Image 1 (cartoon, helix red, strand yellow):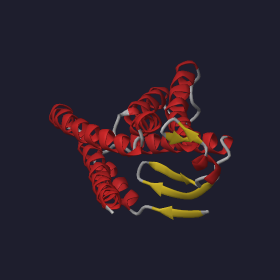
Image 2 (image 1 turned 180 degrees about the horizontal axis):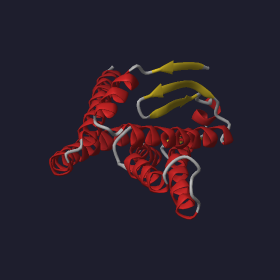
Image 3 (image 1 turned 180 degrees about the vertical axis):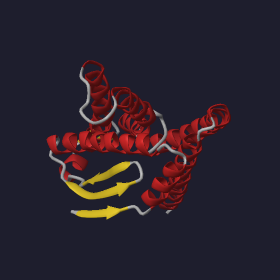
Image 4 (image 1 turned 30 degrees about the vertical axis):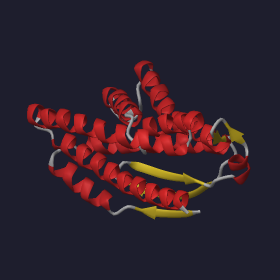
Length: 215
């Protein structure tokens, strides 16, 4: 198992330090790690082993090994692996939801109660945003893959991600102006980065897929 550290985390620490939001940032990162552990434990329960762990500006990114038995077991127009991916994607938001409910009734030891509740709700909503590869996008893609096939799922999720990003960019612009909080700008830039990266992956997938179909 490989462990990697994304050096962009240093940039995020500097930005939030100078904007006097370092405490809330560290709180969110802490609960993001627990959120990702929810994914990990679900994967382990489904007999998938971790392959790579990356420490990122938003917590952990965990990649699980693909089980060939799941690929060979068909489920609709997909396979059993897609069902496991949906369950694993749901596990993270479910973890954040459970934590936010727990902190309504139990005071955390070190972190402020309000910050703990707010952070987990924020992480829950953020990850359920239907943008791939966030949890919401993964869940929708998995369902579409099983029902309509991989090509259709990729196309729909890619279009949906770009439309939602345009809408979110407008909302974040208003939020930055109204609240005068650079965090909204940073989140927007981060989301655009992953969206553009997925756009590139989708175009490459379509080129390869089309070339194979034409042969």
